[in-house]
Image (cartoon, rainbow, N blue to C red; front, top):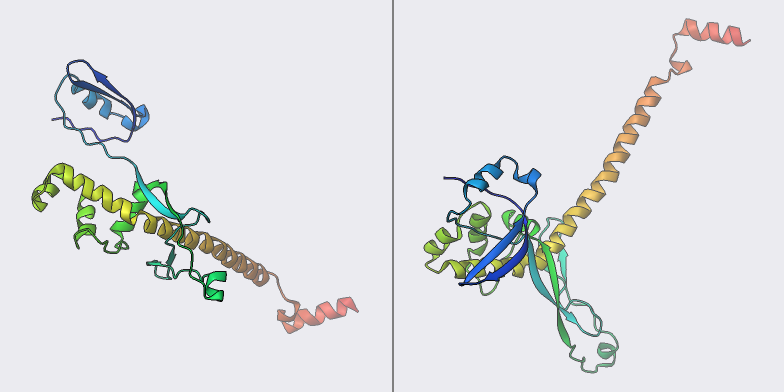
Length: 230
């Protein structure tokens, strides 16, 4: 039995006569490698296909007036993402006037699926209301290669339902994953200058140690040097 696993792009979806839909995929020949022979052997044969997007799409609620998110997040020193405290009200609070209810809009966003999956795999995703308590573990099984069919059987639901559940969970934690990923990149960027400074300090120290000090010369050599100077 042939098996091919690859990353590619969906280029076309064509509806043809007799209730047939033609799907056109584009894959890099270099990435496909020797698997192209396995793929060729599947021509005109029945195959089982699972296609999963490499991006997670989600919506962020924003204040239509300020165009800023309604909910903001912050990351602590351990990398745990929390909902940030709301910003102090401005003039309304100072005058004791009732705050005007903001008009809320939803802004479509997207993030790489591997970022969200890494966030989940590292155990950073908190429980989400409306999902099973072990939802993160369920998604981990999928990330590690478990099939939707087996997960659906274990949870006693249809394959379509488990696909939707996992996709919805990824979308729910995506804003937190984005904030966490930005924090991780900041940690790396801050570490690089510190490492360079430490290396520069070591190089400078090594240079100083390699220069002979006239006061470290033996007494006889120091006397000869002083006599020569005189």
